[in-house]
Amino acid sequence: MMVGVAAVGGCSIVSPDRSVEATRVNAERMTNLRISLPPDQACAKTARMLMWCAGGLGFHYRCDSQSGNARSELNGTMEQVVRTEYFLVVEFLRGGSDTQVTVRQRDALLLTDYGALIDKYFQNKSDCQPR
Image (cartoon, rainbow, N blue to C red; front, side, top):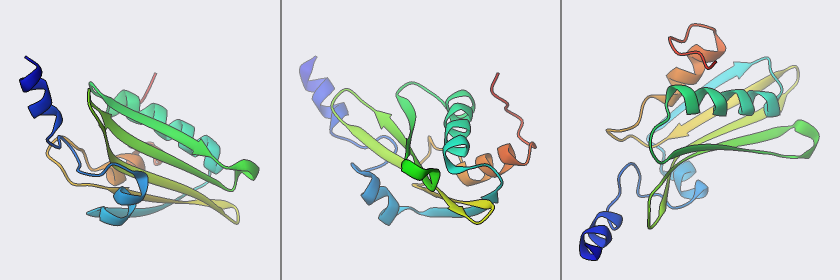
Protein backbone atom coordinates (compact mmCIF):
# COMPACT_ATOMS: atom_id res chain seq x y z
CA MET A 1 0.00 0.00 0.00
CA MET A 2 2.78 2.48 0.86
CA VAL A 3 4.44 1.90 -2.52
CA GLY A 4 1.18 2.89 -4.27
CA VAL A 5 0.86 6.08 -2.21
CA ALA A 6 4.47 7.06 -2.91
CA ALA A 7 4.02 6.51 -6.64
CA VAL A 8 0.86 8.60 -6.79
CA GLY A 9 2.43 11.32 -4.66
CA GLY A 10 5.39 11.66 -7.02
CA CYS A 11 3.40 12.74 -10.07
CA SER A 12 1.81 16.09 -10.80
CA ILE A 13 -2.00 16.18 -10.90
CA VAL A 14 -2.66 19.78 -11.96
CA SER A 15 0.70 21.59 -11.94
CA PRO A 16 4.39 20.87 -11.40
CA ASP A 17 4.74 24.21 -9.57
CA ARG A 18 5.56 24.14 -5.86
CA SER A 19 5.45 27.90 -5.23
CA VAL A 20 3.53 31.06 -6.10
CA GLU A 21 6.61 32.47 -7.84
CA ALA A 22 6.92 29.39 -10.07
CA THR A 23 3.25 29.63 -11.06
CA ARG A 24 3.63 33.34 -11.81
CA VAL A 25 6.60 32.63 -14.12
CA ASN A 26 5.29 29.42 -15.74
CA ALA A 27 1.65 30.40 -16.29
CA GLU A 28 0.33 29.38 -19.70
CA ARG A 29 -2.70 31.69 -19.44
CA MET A 30 -2.90 35.31 -18.34
CA THR A 31 -6.01 37.51 -18.19
CA ASN A 32 -6.26 41.18 -17.19
CA LEU A 33 -9.48 42.72 -15.85
CA ARG A 34 -10.59 45.96 -14.21
CA ILE A 35 -13.19 45.99 -11.45
CA SER A 36 -14.57 48.60 -9.05
CA LEU A 37 -14.13 46.76 -5.72
CA PRO A 38 -11.15 47.37 -3.41
CA PRO A 39 -8.49 44.60 -3.56
CA ASP A 40 -9.29 42.98 -0.19
CA GLN A 41 -13.03 42.72 -0.91
CA ALA A 42 -12.44 41.53 -4.47
CA CYS A 43 -10.03 38.83 -3.30
CA ALA A 44 -12.40 37.56 -0.60
CA LYS A 45 -15.38 37.50 -2.99
CA THR A 46 -13.31 35.71 -5.65
CA ALA A 47 -12.05 33.07 -3.19
CA ARG A 48 -15.59 32.38 -1.98
CA MET A 49 -16.90 32.12 -5.54
CA LEU A 50 -14.10 29.76 -6.58
CA MET A 51 -14.66 27.49 -3.57
CA TRP A 52 -18.31 27.28 -4.56
CA CYS A 53 -18.01 27.18 -8.37
CA ALA A 54 -14.57 25.63 -9.04
CA GLY A 55 -13.96 23.64 -5.88
CA GLY A 56 -13.18 20.02 -5.54
CA LEU A 57 -11.42 17.55 -3.32
CA GLY A 58 -8.06 19.04 -2.39
CA PHE A 59 -8.61 22.41 -4.16
CA HIS A 60 -8.02 25.46 -1.92
CA TYR A 61 -8.18 29.19 -2.61
CA ARG A 62 -6.54 31.60 -0.15
CA CYS A 63 -6.20 35.39 -0.02
CA ASP A 64 -3.32 37.42 1.35
CA SER A 65 -4.02 41.16 1.67
CA GLN A 66 -1.33 43.77 2.23
CA SER A 67 -1.73 46.63 4.69
CA GLY A 68 -3.27 49.77 3.29
CA ASN A 69 -5.58 47.77 1.02
CA ALA A 70 -3.50 48.55 -2.09
CA ARG A 71 -2.80 44.91 -2.98
CA SER A 72 -4.23 41.43 -2.42
CA GLU A 73 -3.23 38.09 -3.85
CA LEU A 74 -5.26 34.91 -4.22
CA ASN A 75 -3.50 31.55 -4.61
CA GLY A 76 -5.09 28.38 -5.89
CA THR A 77 -3.58 25.12 -4.69
CA MET A 78 -4.22 21.42 -5.04
CA GLU A 79 -3.24 19.80 -1.76
CA GLN A 80 -2.26 16.16 -1.84
CA VAL A 81 -1.02 13.79 0.83
CA VAL A 82 2.66 14.38 0.10
CA ARG A 83 2.80 17.83 -1.54
CA THR A 84 0.99 21.00 -2.59
CA GLU A 85 0.76 22.12 -6.22
CA TYR A 86 0.17 25.78 -7.09
CA PHE A 87 -1.86 26.37 -10.25
CA LEU A 88 -3.42 29.84 -9.90
CA VAL A 89 -2.22 33.31 -8.88
CA VAL A 90 -4.66 36.24 -8.99
CA GLU A 91 -3.27 39.68 -8.16
CA PHE A 92 -5.56 42.55 -7.17
CA LEU A 93 -3.82 45.95 -7.39
CA ARG A 94 -5.47 49.27 -6.54
CA GLY A 95 -5.02 51.85 -9.30
CA GLY A 96 -6.98 55.08 -8.93
CA SER A 97 -10.65 54.32 -8.46
CA ASP A 98 -10.42 50.82 -9.98
CA THR A 99 -8.67 47.57 -9.14
CA GLN A 100 -6.50 45.87 -11.76
CA VAL A 101 -6.94 42.08 -11.66
CA THR A 102 -4.30 39.83 -13.21
CA VAL A 103 -5.12 36.12 -13.43
CA ARG A 104 -2.22 33.74 -14.11
CA GLN A 105 -2.84 30.02 -14.31
CA ARG A 106 -1.44 26.73 -15.47
CA ASP A 107 -3.23 24.73 -18.15
CA ALA A 108 -4.32 21.28 -17.05
CA LEU A 109 -7.15 18.87 -17.76
CA LEU A 110 -8.67 19.33 -14.30
CA LEU A 111 -8.53 23.16 -14.38
CA THR A 112 -11.14 25.56 -15.67
CA ASP A 113 -10.43 28.86 -17.45
CA TYR A 114 -10.22 30.96 -14.28
CA GLY A 115 -9.82 34.28 -16.11
CA ALA A 116 -13.14 33.83 -17.91
CA LEU A 117 -14.86 32.54 -14.76
CA ILE A 118 -13.72 35.51 -12.66
CA ASP A 119 -14.60 37.99 -15.42
CA LYS A 120 -18.13 36.58 -15.77
CA TYR A 121 -18.59 36.62 -11.99
CA PHE A 122 -17.74 40.31 -11.64
CA GLN A 123 -20.00 41.15 -14.59
CA ASN A 124 -22.87 39.24 -12.89
CA LYS A 125 -23.07 36.91 -15.90
CA SER A 126 -21.85 33.77 -14.17
CA ASP A 127 -23.91 30.58 -14.21
CA CYS A 128 -22.62 29.85 -10.72
CA GLN A 129 -23.36 32.23 -7.84
CA PRO A 130 -22.26 31.38 -4.29
CA ARG A 131 -25.01 31.31 -1.71
